[in-house]
Image (cartoon, rainbow, N blue to C red; front, top):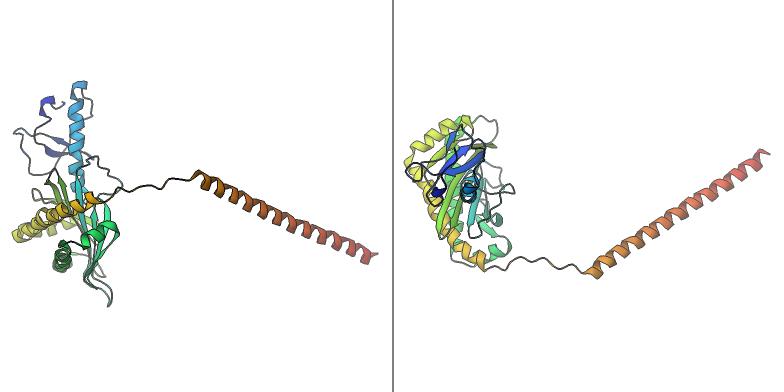
Length: 310
């Protein structure tokens, strides 16, 4: 059954239909506790009067997909021009060799890498124009300190769960913290945990809902879920600190000039084409000259051989 048309402006509860995510209003019109799986799949055959509802659903659906993929990649393209996102990607090792960092972090603004951090130098390196702009703000020192603290905290988490991880070498933990702002408010915040290369847990920090991706991490999820202090820590970082930084970085982002593509000079194109043609002509003449030389040597050798035979 298709949803009613008059629910376009109501609040929506995320619902997963197979591999496609839709947002449908619940019976009270309130936001639900989290993502829930259902067996029924809406085939999209709606009357023409429901097309507006379908478009509204598609725009809102992007927010749920972002929560499932904290660092959006090429598989996800947003059409929300006023939405900004910030993603912190931490790579943690239980131990490392001397001179090698046990923690590395990358920070993305709207999928663009602009900061790098490693525990060996304990310094943040700015990248690109946005990185240089952020480097000149008062947030820089705060961000450097926080990245170091979060790296140490995540390493402690990894050491705590190490007995539950089956591995012969050093254990690894990749953590992606994500937040999004739209219309001057936080519209999404999540954490994704990858243990020893296996995507394991997802935390929706907006409603503190855990999702187990790898069943072997179920016990780890139960342990972390019981730790209210840890959950509060995750929420503070993603909904609080991350959103605060995103608000400040968005001002720098919007002040940046739009990227432009240098116009192509037609004369340059023709010039390069003619140069390429000249190169091929010279190469062909050289090859022909070599072949003719080989042929003349062969003829002289044949004549010399016959004279000797006689």
